[in-house]
Length: 196
Image 1 (tube, rainbow, N blue to C red):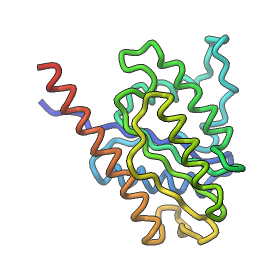
Image 2 (image 1 turned 60 degrees about the vertical axis):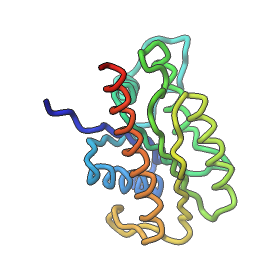
Image 3 (image 1 turned 30 degrees about the vertical axis):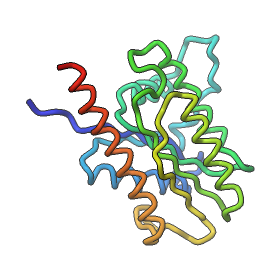
Image 4 (image 1 turned 120 degrees about the vertical axis):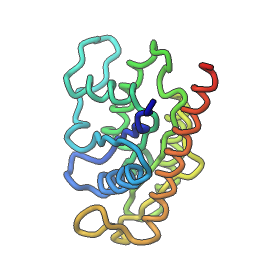
């Protein structure tokens, strides 16, 4: 019996196409794919969702797609710009939709590793943003990976095609991808053992 590949869903970027956080996300998803994952990016315009409203059960097609992808995910990557010491409102709003998973067998982001990536112009606010992102992941019952990547965009970390990165940035993003994949595979083995 052949098992499906782990599914890694990436959320992030900005409304600006090909932003640094979107490039970091796509680079990391490419690494996960080389490690054997099926990957899906939900970024840029895909994140331009209506503000999350728990009192309104109607969801747009884009919001339904996001929730379905997260429900099926074995691991998640979140890449956000640092806006004034925290994550962007666009990424936060997308993460608010995880509330729609509260009644699932695996509620919220339970049993899923979440790789955190923060991009900022300079390093001052990166730490604050990582703390905020990790706190949100914890609140959603996810497992932030031990390592989180930071990308100082003032150092021009990406090439023109978006999948090139300086060696230092590439190493950071590769480590995040490998930790998400490792945890996804360990969780799969654990669930199999529990079912036997």
